[in-house]
Length: 508
Image (tube, rainbow, N blue to C red):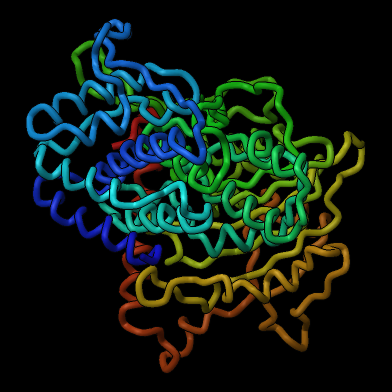
């Protein structure tokens, strides 16, 4: 059976469970638990004989119950009805207390399929395939396909953890990560950047044994504070042959912004979470849930601010080795916001070589109303002189129209950008813009030109928006409708942030 057929088969059952109130995200979680157990069972049998050990059922204190059933696939497939439901509930609770990747996969796990008969159908569906015999590329495509389908369920909010793969692949293609180098993502979501980097390295280098071992166990490092998303990331990585089923996890559950852990990396590839303010949810004395703004008071930050994106930008800079490189997806406000934003932009250009900014169109993210850019920069040793000499801009926003369903952005759409970026020698570039060709999308601005702009504004554009002057070239109605929706939602988000400031930081 092809990977497309398997994805379709597994996902079709999601529709049945949807009628029972099981969301797509909950269904994907159950698939993850069961798939992990099934693969562990396969690895314990010939020809693998890994000897992976699973505990017996545990009591509420986390101690194994003598003579109880083992928390493994073989026991699970042998049960039915109410006995199956009870055992599955106990299994999830028991495995959540384990160490390493096993415990992280099952952290805060719950059974969301309350009908034992339908739970049995999902188990049988997983049991029909020999997952360990599939190549990592096939297993990876199957799971990535499920993640993308889940991201399309916009009501669940899962899309914020899923960066469009064409954009990720373009960023990796520009960075060209090398073997025996470390790669980090402080907000790794479902692991898209890691997998694209893994594919790039394996496809473009003939790896020796040590390089393969390093790639599998030491290359990738990430943070993901949402337990459900972290488990999806770990499973996604494992299915791509990254990490060990009984090994330590390389995805931390800690908030990356809390402190500097001292680790430094060769590359940082990331799309920090959407939303301008950093906040945490608390319960007040009256039992009411409130949101409280967070300002990370870190001595290694240039500025103290509650702006989540600016905090991530400062943190990413500090994560890099002396000549480390970063490619980061950030919203427009990072480019023009005054106060702390202005000072952070100045410091970024002084201490790193901020060499490229890719302006992205709307309609490419699953979260509506997002106007984003990709910032490419390289760390530099301390110096009195600014490390940025010029910044190259590629405007792939003006007069570009995409929708997620009818006209999604593809890797081919960004081929011109990659060619102009010139990853083989990015110091050798040529503008496509000129006085004679004002429609060129590729243009550079010097450090002094940017510094002279009000608030050191990096929100630079020069192309004429045709939709404002040429009624004959209006986009299709569905594209226009999508842009109107995105503009309204973007405006609402901005209004909420303003009202939050007026009301003492509490979002209304």
